[in-house]
Amino acid sequence: MLYSSTSQQQTKEIAHTFAKTLVGGDIVFLDGDLGAGKTTFTQGVLESFGYTEPVRSPTFSIMNIYPINRGLISKVIHLDFYRFNSPDEIRTLGLEDFLEDPKIIFLIEWPEKGTGDMSSLVPTKTIHFRTISENEREININ
Image (cartoon, rainbow, N blue to C red; front, side, top):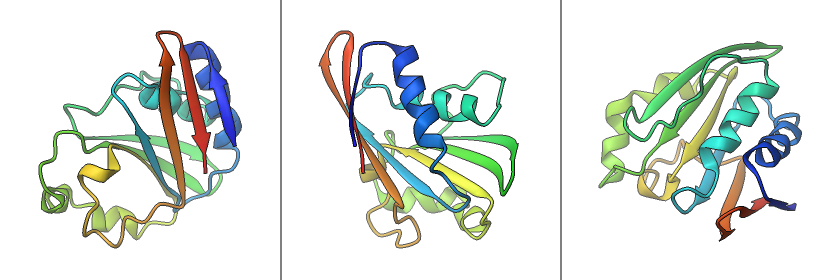
């Protein structure tokens, strides 16, 4: 499904709609240029789950874990692999324990930087973000 967004609020509204399709165990790849709206989209997903605390980009922390209470979903793990130089670096995060929990949703920015040989990180959904202009984004949800 292809969407066009001209504001952060509109991107969050698209994310609210998308969040209704998520189930525990989903691994969502967020692909797109810097500043294309990946973290804003994640903020919208978490808002739709009732999360009210700040949602920040994991660019420097690499991994942010958000506890939620949404039926069969207990956590959203937001990852950013932008700073990774090799897929081997992913192993240091200890994701294997989390991957076995069917109550967790993963939202992964820059997945191509860190998932090369991680067969356990196979996306259930992929979202492509493209900057059209300063205020317009194209969001393609597969």
